[in-house]
Image 1 (cartoon, rainbow, N blue to C red):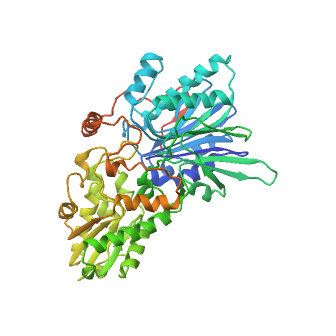
Image 2: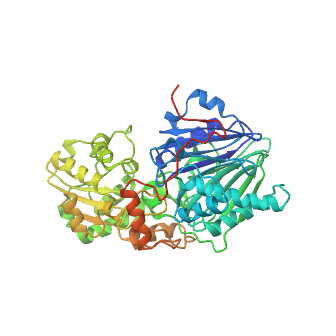
Image 3: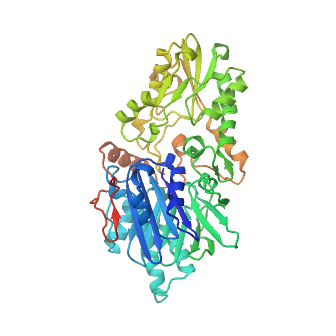
Length: 511
């Protein structure tokens, strides 16, 4: 679940890209990268770590140019330990292209065979994003070759249309074509988000940006224009002219439901839906479920697991008529445990991340509210901390339904064995996390909350809750292969992870 950001401006973009990526840091903490375009020359720096760790002053000075793209990585495919898989990726032909991708492809093996064995292109890493780049580059090469090597807007959009016909999965993409401009496009189901923004100068000139979340534009004083539609491509020339076209044959808006529950920042608006307002309303429907399944007279106080669940917990407490308290203090210098690689790291970081205040727990029956329960590691540790702090009983409520199925579109929960709710009832989950009761949101209620805020949303990717995969092609054999590759620590396909030296790429080392 990465974050992407692209800019075409009338001033240097390096600082704006850096600031924008910091606003997207919640979407990925494994690696970060920026590529800028100065005329027809790319400058790029990328490496492992958070934005503030990857970029130093000397790196920023080298990132000159008035157009650029940036990426924060959350590893879901390829080799998470390799700095070579930090994005953006680069190919030299045609023209020179750099690309960054948020999402996950589900037919990567098939695409790899096509671009490498059939079309003789070279893929340097195990990343599906590099495969995606090569699919696009090949189609663009065919378009411009037929036109005498002169690139036009139609050629770019035609290449995206042909890519849509080959690629399955979820993708929000930003790319730079050397000497021409910025391209952004979204998968035909709109599973991954992509937003268009602009900044109008007093002299009439316009800067344009494309980002994974609208909060980027708020921080830069840009105006959020609209969401890029499913299947749509947008191209912005280096002099600031914007073109757009629907490039998919049968687009359908079916955004990832988990974005609204957990991943997106609360101050973002995604596909016309305020994330904060959605989470508040999740608290109302969850309160009704709690009334049905728990004796609310037993509950003394409602507490959130900070920070994502706070809006839902506050509204739930209000609708139950119970006191709301902040019982856990969060150490903001510890990363989000859900996206930390490795079970041992996640478990250890929970107690570093949250500290209970004994006075809020002692002698009380507590209803803890979290955004979701995925592996159960965090939930179990939190329940144990609450009881150690003196709670008599600890009940647990999840603003999301039971996560029972693997996600194949960019969320790192691919094996059923990792999912605590898989094959278990709510009572059995409660026993597993040492809680005195456990309540999950109803899927229909959750979908209804979001759809009421934007009736144009036709359906959702709710695959991790119901096992229905929007793009098709996901069968039991596919899930078994994914589970085996994940458990063995291997990617779906493994290629040499070497840094591409065809352009200057720094490795993220400190000064």
